Image (cartoon, rainbow, N blue to C red):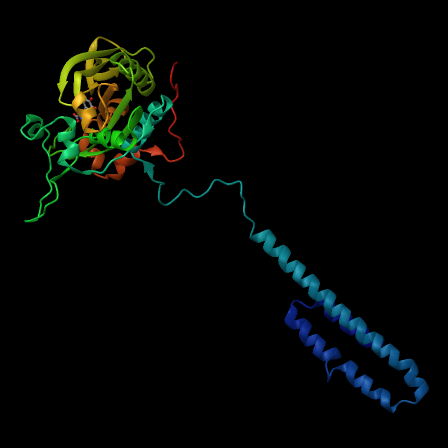
Length: 359
Ligand code: DAH
């Protein structure tokens, strides 16, 4: 029995894998194994001998069983150790560079956010209107009657109407000014809104595309004045171009929807063919503005005897070209990945301003 024990305990300790262990188990304590055979031999013994040998055999069987289990556990541990040693991962290594670069925020989106944030800081609320407008909102309500030359000058896209269509004529809005009317109709006065969005005109060259972007401003109150307009725009330019005390110039102009009207220029200079904003004694036109015409207030349901205020309209794309040095507007909308990556902004950059507003 001792020989048997030694033989099996040594073989088990040396077993290389689970298959070998299983073979040993069958050979030793399986139904036809060596220990089972010896147990069968108990029947031929006399009772006293059996009383001595029986427990010994049982003990041997138990010993082999637990040796098998111990070896099995040891083999599993060793296998795990080996995997841990060979399959380790250094989580401190830099990641593999992404096969696809992440997308970027478009220059127009970025600038729209910047402009909106600055005006929001001054209490302007964002408003929106449809891009397909009736000619009432795009023209008539803005004091541009049917015969007015501004209708032609705006290179308007008209929507075709089926014969017998009784609906009013529709256009692709040529400016964001109709949002002035819609906002006043919806909310009355007083009101302070900023309305960014797409506008359309049949025009195409280095600084014009058939679709482009404007941002409209409107502030109506009891005594909102041209002086308030000037302050608000100066705050805006200083924050947007990040130049404190940037000079502005208001030039008398004409728009049907404002009286008086002013075109606003900002200070700039050209050094070696490079545009510098906020310095020098050159001027760059950036927006149209004025005091909202009484006709416009009236057509939006606001009493001009009681209310007054200013409005302005800025080209977002033009602002983007000036601030970020993008020379050709057409490239804005070509979806060329090289342009998008060059002029795009990281989605992780929150569009806040470096300087904010100086109050
Ligand atoms: N709507 C004008 C345009 O598209 C811009 C404009 C000028 C808007 C004067 C205004 C304004 O609100 O007061 O050219």
